[in-house]
Length: 139
Image (cartoon, rainbow, N blue to C red; front, side, top):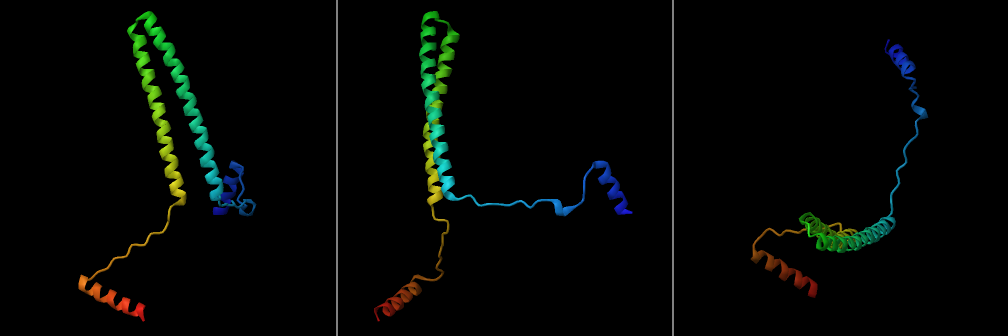
């Protein structure tokens, strides 16, 4: 009876139950070289865009300040202040970008295994052990 229901559902939904026709997904490992190249490319692209935004922002600040002086309208000065803050935030993002790049570079070159050794005992026991070890090394 189950097969009959499954067959009817397959027919209505126009699907098949043949498992052999499905393809197996192949996973691949991305090499670190490509990752490093991507990080470098992304860094240069982001840096270039941030520089362009700062430069355009400087041009806009010059224009809005000139407009503010000409019209002496309070709203123009408010917009100029907001624009200056935005450009300053963008310049700050340049510094953040440098720090993030350093973190990424440090991440790829850092040691992945760390061994912590703990000695449980008294200092006199440790000294005796070290003396014995030194005598063995001298012989």
